[in-house]
Image (cartoon, rainbow, N blue to C red; front, side, top):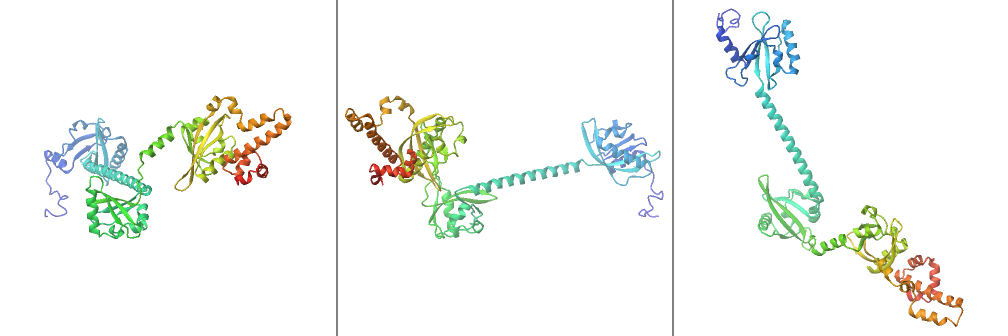
Amino acid sequence: MTSGGNNFWSSGAVPLIEPEFLGSIIGAASDIALVISAEGYILSVVLNAQSESFGNLKHWEGRPVVDFLTRECVPKFEAAHAAYMAGEVPRKSLELNHSDNAVWQYPVRYTFHRFGHENAALLLGRDLRPIAETQQQLVQAQIALEQGYEARREFDARFRMLLAHCQEAVVFVPVQSGKIDDANEAAAALLGLKLDALKGSSFAQQFSDHSNIGLMDSLMNATLSEDGGQVTLRSSRGSGNLIVRPVVFRAGGQRVLLCRISRDNEVSNAPDAAATQALDLFRSGSDSMLFMSDKGMITSVNESFLDLVGAVHQSDVVGRSLSDFLVRGQIDLSVLTDQPERSRRMRVYSTKLINDLGARLTVEISATHLDAADTSVIGCVIRDVSRVEAARPQSETQNQMTPESARNVMDLVGSASLKDIVAETTDVVEKMCIQTAVELTNNNRVAAAEMLGLSRQSLYVKLRKFSLLNKNG
C-alpha cells in the first residue's frame, strides 16, 4: 500500500482526526460551514479564521436556518434539503442570500456533504461578496460607459446640427496634418468642392499662394494676435480673395484650428446702431407700422397697429390681406401696392381703416417699396388723423370746392335758375373727383375707375369729355 494510491482514503490508512482539529480544517476549507440537522436547525457554525467580515454568528446555533435566509432563498433551501433527506445529495452548488436582523445580507455558495449520523448535513460555503462587488463595479462601469456614449452622441448631434445651420463657412484643421478634419456645407460651397471631397483634403490645396507648412505657420501666428488675427488667401478655384480667421484649441492630444472663412469683399453682418434703433422704433413707435408682400399679405406688424385695429395677438393679423382692414378694400390695396412698386414710395394716401368690430378711422398711409433678399416687401406707416379731422372747422371739412370754383358758382346766383346752376356745378365737381382719383392712383385708370365706382369704359368717356385723356395719358 502506498500513500499515493487511489485506495488511501478508503482503506482506513487515514488516521482519525482529533475533534479539536476538525473545526479548523473545515474552517480552512471554506469561508463558512454550517451543520444542519434533519429538522433544518443549525447545530454548529464554523467560520474561516482568516475572514472577519462575518462577525460573531454564535447566535445562529439552535435556530432554524430559514430564519437567516432572505425570503426568495427559503424555497431554494427547502427543496435542496428535502432532496438531501430523500437520500439524494445535491450535486450542484446552492447560492443562498443570508440576512441577520434586516441589517445586512450577503450571498454564499454552498455544497452539501453527508456528515455523521442522524441525517445531519454539512454545508461548506464560499463567500460571494467579493464576486458580487466586482460584478457591481462592472455594472456601474457599464452604466457609466453607456452614459458617456449617450452624452457623446447627444453632443455630436448638437455639433452636426450647429454646423448644418451655420451660415458662416467653418472648417476644422489639425495643425500636425494640415488636412481638413470637418467642415460645413457653407465652407464646401465657398471653396468650390462637395463636402465629401473637402473632408480629408489638404487645407493648403484650397489656396494658390501657400504651401502646407507655410499656411499652418501663418494661421498659428494669426491666433497669437490679441484682436483676433486674420489671413488673406487667394482661392485656387477662382473665388477671389478669402479671409480666414483661425482659432486654435487642443483636443485629443493635438492642436486643432477652427477656421472661419469669408470673402474679402463681404460686409460684416453685425447689426449697427441704426439697425438696432430702427428695430426699436418699429416695436415701440407710436405710429402704426406693418410690412406686407407685393400682393398685400401682411407679414409683420407692431403693437401700435394692433391697437389701431383692435386685434389681441399678431396671429389675428399676420397672414391676412391688408384689404380686410381698408374700407374700400381691394381698391385702396391696389393703390398702396402699385404706386410704391412704380415710384418706390408713396408719401401720403388718405383713406379709412375698419376693424373687425366695424369701427372706422380716418388714416394717412405712407408706403415704401423695399428690396428683400428673395421677395418684394412694402413697408407702411399709418397715422390716425381722425382726431385732427374732428377738430377742423365744419366749413373746411365739408367744402371741397376751390375758392375759384365757389366764386364762379356764386356769380351764377340771380342770373340763372337753380336747375341750371346745379347742372353747371355738377361738371365742376365731377371733373375734380376724376382728377383726384387719377392723381391718387398715379394715372392707374383701372384703380381710379374702381375707386369712383365706374366701369373702365365710362371713365375713359368722362376723361375725354373733360379733356383729361391726353393730359394724363
